[in-house]
Image 1 (cartoon, helix red, strand yellow):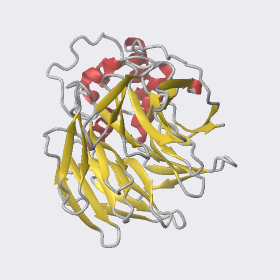
Image 2 (cartoon, one colour):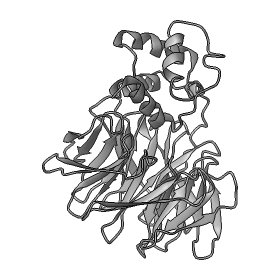
Image 3 (cartoon, helix red, strand yellow):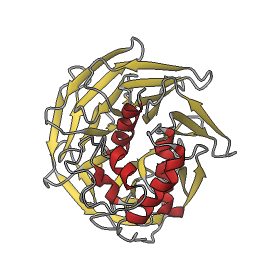
Image 4 (cartoon, helix red, strand yellow):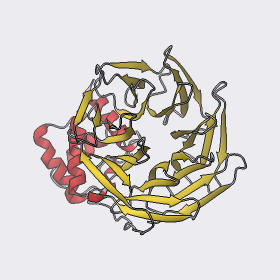
Length: 408
């Protein structure tokens, strides 16, 4: 793969955009490393993303991420580039985490991912009690046994495939979205063999989240292409359909008790479902036009719960009536609620921009919040899953960790 293509994929993965800034380097402070930063970063995306800033540990981790994916900077130039970024673009001001005590006891365990800069994206709790993760920038899938701490990483078939979403089938195979190559992948953990299913539409370049329905059909979103798809594992047949709302960016997915797939549209203020037979998409519009639902969970009563990343809210949609109710997340409008699951009678989610990141519990009966600070800061839980015994699991991208929330 050409280096320019690799760099383009890296920034698309990290930033979700490919638009270039019209005046590269303007307002960037002078100093050693500036030319490299402007030339390489601006070659493929909005260079202003750099100005978002990180602390020193964050910039070091991002350096490893970029190196893993082959960004065209010579090894001897990385210290200069990283020092320039640390010096000129420190961490942004972040809302302080609001820690709220409550009736539930829980502890958070964390394990470091072996490959530095792996960027663990999605976690998966499998039937055998293991925790898996996608190493988006290391091109690996990883597995840990929480009881023993034993870890194994699996190399994928195609280089720079960008594993992203993650799920398990009935036979214990691990399926993933190859976000950087427009494909769906299947790993057989017994043999390590990977099967790839290329998406039939060249516009479908970035498959995102995936889930199985109860009939064994695999459903997935393709965010930037504005597409939802299905794959029949028995035949390999893939069907794609475009979301009715332009640039709606289909994102997180969940399945209700009636075997209906729901998903949120991160590019707009909508929640949607898709018909299993016709693939017709039905949308519900959230009342606030600024809402940007990113992940989704469904409670046993088939209420749709979503994290409003842009406004810092937890929301609930009743698809039968269209009624929406929202609650401000404890750390406020800039807290960036992200991954979410329903387990043990409550919603569990994380605040991805609070400092430190938090795990949040919301009791839908009492409408009360309880929160825990993630040890070491968290940074950033992009998705969550639930173990067979009901404990949330996490993958923490910037700290290169996977986690387990043990509810007492």
